[in-house]
Image (cartoon, rainbow, N blue to C red; front, side, top):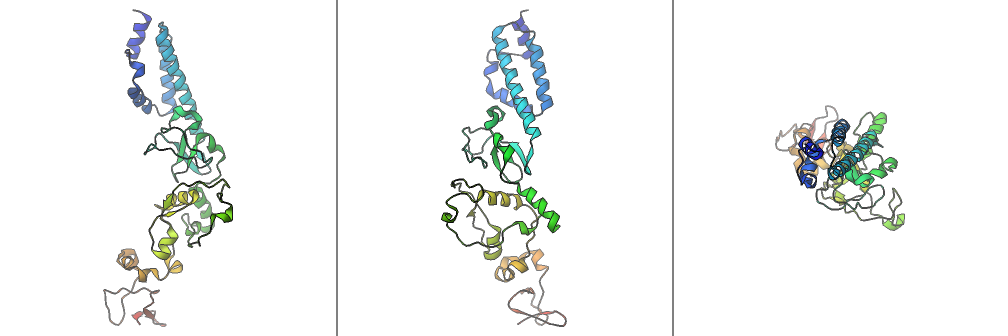
Length: 290
């Protein structure tokens, strides 16, 4: 039996083995850890020693080189997983196939698929705030992850999801000329990113859920807190909200803070201490219709 036949039996090779990209990709997806990668490389090296056919040997050597490059990059990712509070993981593929922009260098990626084969040019994304950055840009990030900002503020306010980290005033419109048409954060020339999101301040003050254009840093903060238990004191921020928005009276949590009129006992009309149409007894704090 020739060396080529021995290699074919051990690897189960066929003539089109190295051209079957789909099967190779499925196999590589299973190789997710450094230990698995090292074991696979060792098996390929042992098989290579018994091969005499030069063509098969060249293809196998190329495969080993690709696996070693992938192993080195995988080790680099594991060593620098957390940067400035960001938990960065590689992006394997874009959902829409469109080009993404690095939040650090503001350059677009040339590839539609971002995998370990793209060397340092592939993108990584923060699992907490969706911060997107090139692999070679992640060592010197200009922006902390909102998760780290909230955790640091917890040392002062004793509450990790404090509303003090969120701007709760609707700022007046200011022209970009005041900041010389540059980003207020990184001073780079402003590029239109078309990012919009529902703004907490507009909900509290105007009950407005219309997405508005925001900066990338604001977008990442809102992406992080939108599913977190951030507490807002509505009585201090907008005491009229419960009286103006009928839907809030139907929420059980809000209804638990309301009162019935002590005189007419109308159970359909729930009164709140901050409502404009009520009167309070100065002695017993009972609530009545005016």
